[in-house]
Image (cartoon, rainbow, N blue to C red; front, side, top):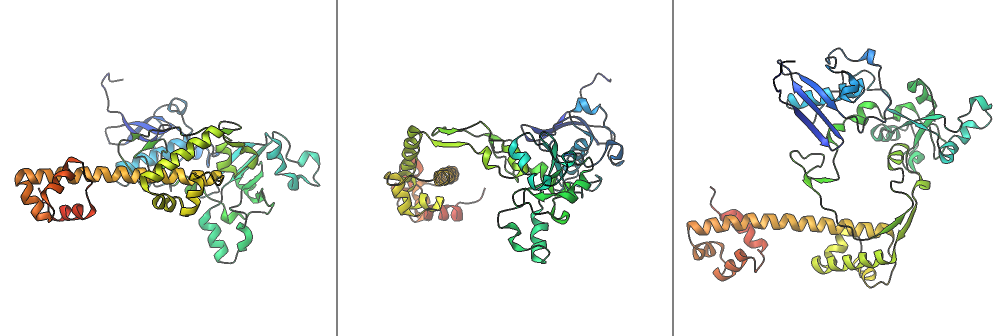
Length: 389
């Protein structure tokens, strides 16, 4: 301990996905704290004893850092990509096992999960069956490998008639061996090893994960995030808070987890009122187009002539949010144009600028004061004519 303060750096992808580190005298990262959110459900692709020698041994006990060794190695490579100037491209090649099938472990803790193995269990002695509360293995499908296999004729196109396979297998303490017994739990069809997603594919964009709770937190954005303000517009009755979202993400859709009772009568009225307000603000044509509906369908919703499906309501709400965002962006852009116009007028005069833009000086004055909106023609002319600097 030197008793001196060291700079502490952070790479923060979301509130639950970040790493804290120092840099040693050679500029190499020394990880102090890391979070395995988004990695913790995967089984380790290699043992600690097989960790790559190219990645320095952790300077603190892994329990103090908060992750397993392979999580530490992933974070180390993410930091190195940032330090070397290619933050989007993380080199995972030093990690052994990353080209093997990515696998998670779950417990057959419900009757629905256990029923997935009815066909597998049929005819087997009790000792060889998958039983209640036994573990099971879950794999992901590589879209690229799947579509390539279909294109090459290795798999029939009807293989995906019911969507991507939801791949599971009986538990095996060797997951690579277990992958040879995996099947689509929805159809019972065996799933070839060649179309399973690898660890490399599954975590390739781990460091680019978007954060839906904040603005400026999309996959390709960087910098400080901003608060995303949420407005509750209606009440919908559901069976439970989370509907086992994480399980469904990794195991495939489970209809029995989707317990939804629909909107309350008051909630439905509130939503229709909100949609009506948006239709008046943006116009029925703009709103219906943004939602992928016909104008007649939107009019029927607003007139209470039809009871819209939940998906239709969701599409309308998404459309309203998109139009609001587009409007906010336009207001920000207009404000920048107005500021530049005012600066130009200060250096010349209102009359001279209006003459250049070929509009009436009084109309330009109203646009600058906000009593009249900027037209697209004025914006285009301003961007072309306002002197640089």
